[in-house]
Amino acid sequence: MTQKKHKVQVKNALGLHTRPATAIVKLLQNSKCDVFFTHKRETINAKSILSILMLAAKKNSKITITVDGEDSEDTLQKLVEAFENRFGE
Image 1 (tube, helix red, strand yellow):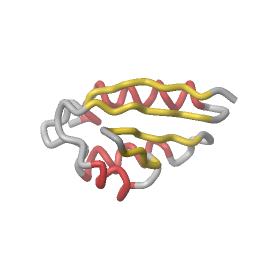
Image 2: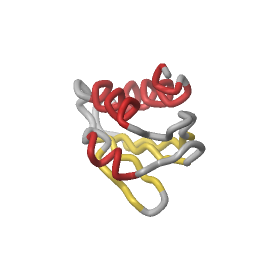
Image 3: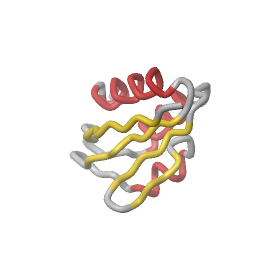
């Protein structure tokens, strides 16, 4: 098992609000690995909508994604793409 980390930037005008948070949780629901987001000094489970919202990550915030588990590479790639595409907004 390998742990992977990647830094992304929040591009959504409203930051990580309900819609992107929902998209993240949906994207991760079939993922077999653990996924964590770290913003400032807080690390949360990215499979929890409430935790993502509690990060209160605004536009241009830097988030470190940490994935750990068997499909970590695939999961990380999907997440990075989702951040790049502003979760379809």
